[in-house]
Image (cartoon, rainbow, N blue to C red; front, side):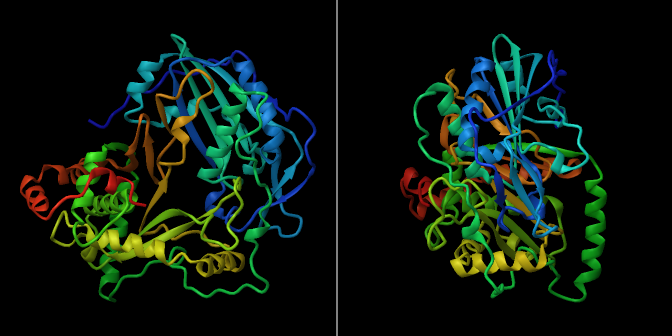
Length: 466
């Protein structure tokens, strides 16, 4: 049920080349903020796009060279900061992005079918750079894989220390814009400077920041149970992780929202995050007294004063943290998801400017990673415009990550702005249970009828409540 076939190997007729900026660019060191330079962000965000029609590779290289004039830090190289050996900075030296071209004996339709359940063989869609460490890898890697029948797969890898999801979308849209309208100015000019997110001097930590602190149980007697459960989880995770991809239509999301009516209004993200978190916990069956967390990305560009400038493409997000016990989250009144939704809303509400500034100062003093020991992590890729990337031959028919073993990702649905695809990897032993809990809410006709009696609002009111 959970197996998936590997895709064929890529055929490289030529060695990858470096695409440099079209014209001279500024040469300097780019400061990375503490939100950029978190240790858990020292990796590349890897996107996969599938198109029915291929785009001329030379045109893509030419427009990439042009857009790198504006986004010149992506043509530079990461290095250790001269002021602080624990931090990275960008050497804006114009060395260029690595661009690879390949062919695969596969059709677009075959890949579209395979995309229902990604696997590790997808890694071959991105040229593997032999490097000693992350600093030796260009911040921007691109591979165009031409397919049988004229289709094309575009795979991009952008170092997360330079861009967040909004920033990568902004860059990719700029590249696509110059591919189709080479003489037009960019709709959004990039803003490079990161000093608005510098720590205060001296740092002033005014909150405890549970997103980085280690979780503890609520009782001393629970510690032994926790240790036993953690050991079992580690054993289960030594199994191969199975990617689960589930699509939630607008009507299904509405159904979830109605479970919170009439006492609680919520956004699509809040209710789907709560439902996925609960389903993950239920499938793993941890002890009731165990404290567990939900960590999720929150855009803070407009939560700061002054707001981060339009065009800011660095990391402008922080982690929201909801925390509760298994018993309080799951309880016995399934599918009542009020508690989880309220926790997500409270975690968002606490992210004031002072909280964000305190977090930046906290990272300055401690250089810590988020607590992932008993946490479920969601990365929000929906509603960023990632699914609309058009290089002149139409929008993609598939968009998603190259791999999905670490976080749960909420993906946009191509052709349906109000739908969401949930992609998460779980140990094989709990995969069927997880799918059951994710889908089970749609099969309870008696509860649905009771909800109808409580009244219903218009679908679009719920789906666009933000």
